Amino acid sequence: MTGLALSRLLGSGDWLANTINYEIIKGNAIWRFVVVLLVVLVAVAAGRIAQYFITSVADRREKKRGINVVTLFLNCLSKPISVAVFALGLFVCRALLVFGDAGINPSIGIYWIKIAQAVAAIAFAYALYRLVDIIEYYLQLWTGKTKTKLDDMLVPVIRKSLRITIAIIAVLWIADGILEAEIRTILLSAGVGGVAIALAAKDTIANFFGSITIFADRPFQIDELVKIGEHFGPVEDVGFRSTRVRTLHGHLVTVPNSVIANSIVENVGRRPFIRRTSNITITYGSGHSKAKRAVEIIKEVLTNVPEVNTDPQKPPRVYFSDFNDWSLNIYMSYWVKPPDYWVYHEVNERVNLEIMKRFEAEQIEFAFPSQTLYVKKD
Image (cartoon, rainbow, N blue to C red; front, side, top):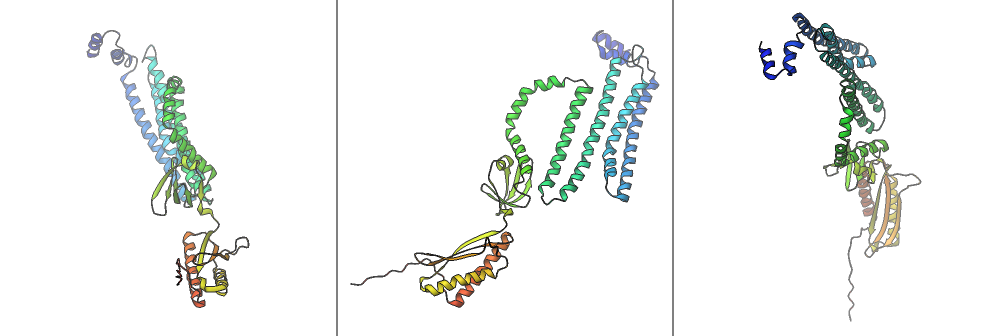
């Protein structure tokens, strides 16, 4: 009676009151709705049981045989199966109710089927979403065999890209194909807004394509010493938007990938050796014999250092090169292998100390900037 009074109050065209009092109840006994509720509860419980059963089987197989395609496949399907069972329960509930002229409004039955189909489509898309884990697992095994660490960072990028693609396709498929929403109209009307968003996000898009360039060209690897513009240090991380470089001062610098793609990248970490060039100065009082002996001593010292490269194409170079204003100049150049920055400094220290020791024994004096003034007396 209350519903009828509400219908009269709101008018004969009020579909909500009619639906509550007439359309839903008409042609269906109360027990049918009770059974529908029980089926929904059973579907939820059955989904949980199926999920637990599949997970248990996967765990037992993994303990006996280790991780393989079957165990990964079962783990991926354990959660989507509960959604699929719930979708099946919705289809069963639809069959328990009477629709049409003698029952519930047929439009409700049509929407019921569409919702059940949408839930089933969600379960299918969720399964594909989880199956990406199998691709990720085997990609990690493959990248683990390579020397480069950029491949290891590319795996999460591929995983996220695949999952985002699956999610977008699933949403469009469910909205347009099942629920029959006007997705095309919405997308067309959003075209102008999309252009505005694209213009606003041009830097983000440029950084994304910059990251693709880095992953494709591989100008550097993780932990390699690089120089990008004014920034010099090892690479710590490469992301979608930026690359992080730890400078030799300990500062963490974030460089946009678009900048790296358009900059000259000097990969110091891939050098086969580190070159040292130095000028050793001795006094003019050393004379011809000691100058010649100084050159010989430096050559002997470099020959006895195992880290100094003795390749015929790049041997140590020592020459009496110039007469400076205040000294005799000896040019020294050599290459240190392996190209380790700290090994390079250790080698330089040994070379310097040995040269000082040998010069002291030969009484060869190092020169320092000085001037000698001669005063002419009348």
